[in-house]
Length: 139
Image 1 (spheres, helix red, strand yellow):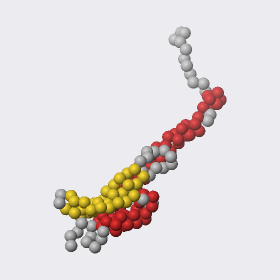
Image 2 (cartoon, one colour; image 1 turned 60 degrees about the vertical axis):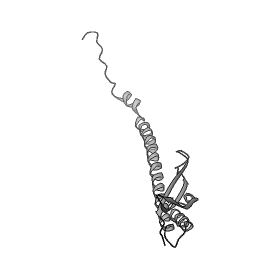
Image 3 (cartoon, helix red, strand yellow; image 1 turned 90 degrees about the vertical axis):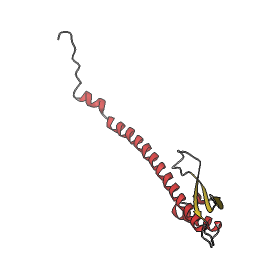
Image 4 (tube, helix red, strand yellow; image 1 turned 90 degrees about the horizontal axis):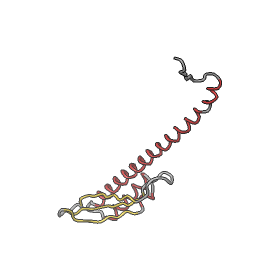
């Protein structure tokens, strides 16, 4: 091979000197990406957990308010107590209950409006609205 150049990687101190510190940079870049991914997953898990707790609390409040000897006000109080015990009082600020008719049946409907839980300042903001329903018992 006349005239052809063979490119070889330099070996020795010069090659090691150019790559010195690259592992630290790689570690930092990958760590930042993993941290952002972890915080995103944590945000979703927290929002789903709080939503599930509030839905269950609203349903339990509706079941209590649906009893013969109870009123919708009792359902609101029960819903607030359950939400406060499970997550936080700030998610139980806007709880309402009312009796409605659905397909000719008396139904108690408990509605909870709460802010979307956000980790830090990043993430979506807004209000989540959930309902719990139960049949009203007849005397």
